[in-house]
Amino acid sequence: YINADDSRMAPNTFQGYSLYGKAGGEDDAPAWRYGAGYITKIKEKNSDEFVWMSHVAGANVNRGVYIAGANFKQGAFSIGAINYYSNDIINIFYTEAKYTLPLTDRYQLQLSAQYSDQRSTGDNLLTGNNFSTHQAGVNADLGIGAALLTMAYTNTANGAAMQSPWGGYSGYTSVMIEDFFRAGESALMLRASYDFSSIGLEGLSAYALRVQGSGVNAPAYNENETDLDLQWVPKNGALKGFSFRTRYARVNQRGSGDPDINDFRVIVNY
Image (tube, rainbow, N blue to C red; front, side):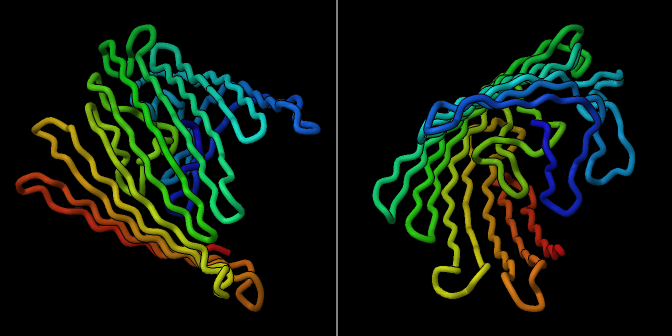
């Protein structure tokens, strides 16, 4: 929940203190990674100054965020959990598990599940009232040679919408524009991607996806999103070191009078 969120060009950056460590992992032994920290301020990607983490969340007090988490991995299985606590603001708990099944030399299946819980803390300075909500999700990735097929589903509780004030949202159905995490919202995503390097187009890749949302009560409307993405990263020649990316998203809002959203982006990095 605290991340760069550099979906356009510039990332979020942070001020704070952190400590990381690891143990095990040699000779196929179980591996542990763990960390803790206190993050005081954030400079958002559209800003040029650092402000308190609590201000960006929406509370007019000076508060940072305490973080602690760990991850366990053995073979094809991993599970991790992390907790974010901001006094009088919000507590966020997140956990995720993954398991990879190598079916054949050509086919590989990865299954994963995630759960997020959010609730107010202390004096409820974020909204002025006590609140709690959660979201659960499952995801399946099927690799077929250079192609990857994905199916994902998420469901958000009715208590409140999920929040992600300090970075991009981690839900499986969070895509280019929409996060599909409103109160009571369910979402199903189908995604297909392909790496064209296998047919001689080195560095060229593309994906297309569709998310279908449902369960939102009036006056809000349910919506769908379709995304297309084409990226080229030259591996040699005069353009080596560049990357070129074109992205398009369309959101269909299934309500009377609500306009659709079209978003087109071209990004060049060196």
